[in-house]
Amino acid sequence: MKQFLSATAFVMCLLFTLGSCKIYDCGPSGDNTLYETIHANETYTYDLGSFGREEGASIIRQAEHYRVSRVYRQHDGSSMIYEYKPERDYLGVDEVEIHSERGSDGASQSDEIVNTTIRFRIIP
Image (tube, rainbow, N blue to C red; front, side, top):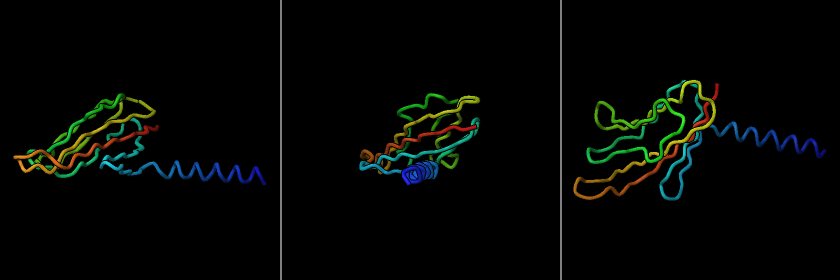
């Protein structure tokens, strides 16, 4: 009976871990953490949303194992996109932190500040 319970607990933990590959977690300060699983050499993009002319986003903690890791404004000028591509044939984990500011009217500072952490698991 003990072995059955241990095996059941192990399977439940495994299912919870595998099922949480894409979790969106909001912290108390408006900070967000995303857990993403991507394949080696795959390009990942994340739409940070619309930003006004005075608003924007930037990387405040760069990933360590990247070929491409950047924030850029869409051609239409409103949306900001984060793009990531791991080092060639890299397998493992990586993480980036992006700082975004919204709510500026052009005369005052932004009042909506969010740090988004994206944690990558890169698989074959």
